[in-house]
Length: 316
Image (tube, rainbow, N blue to C red; front, side):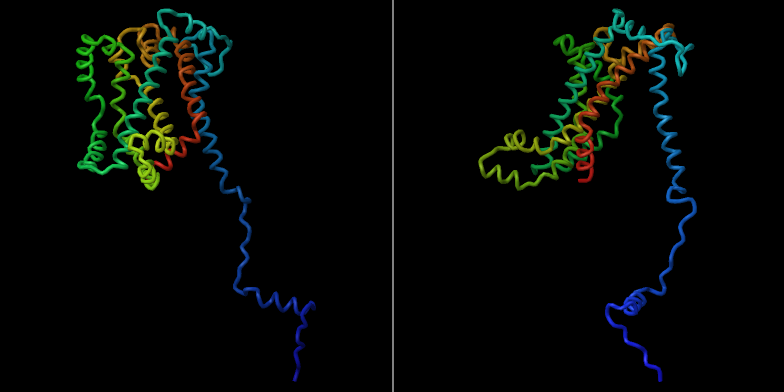
């Protein structure tokens, strides 16, 4: 009879016995994939590079056309033979096409309209979120239903309405900045209210109840406490409204008929039609690039608030 030696702790024989007892005999060692870790993902980088080139091509073409002193649609190339700021100089000095006036009108209309939409939407969203009243749910559904109708259905009625209002109050009639801003305030309801309400619902109601115990009214709670807590969604709605109004063209082209009251969209469009569209293409490209500056700066300034507002407001 053969007696097996008992492994003593700390000896090489004991270490070998421990490793053999803990090792799983069914464990399989996978062979490394051919091509390395990035061998199967190279096509993703190719797709990303193609997408970036596709997105940057129009921008690079506009920059090239704006710096081309010839400035015509026929002779514009991807890489200009000569570089000059002539198109920018003509754009700012041409009195028949006041670019700076168009820029000021667009900034004024977009700012007033966006601030008004944020305020009206926030007030409505607070009422739907914090108060309980008859017709609350049908009102929310009605706002959602109204968004299904295209806005172009109201253009004729708005034109006739404000043509009559202009006879009584000329500052709010056709071809006025304040009149067009007042029309844009009608877009405050609908999607904005739903987005704002979703964010308002994430604010704990215990804060409102504690403020009511201290004697605060709904107005004080709304202006001094709730608006500060929902600042990300307010910035988000302001950005969406500002960008939409800053680039709006269809209603502005119908409403604004005087050159000095036009916006950037209407003014630049007038440079791209008619017999002079070939000659003014360089100025059109320069104006298009300058038009994108406020939107880009707004995105860079509030991109963190935009991400937070969209994610929190849409989840609820």
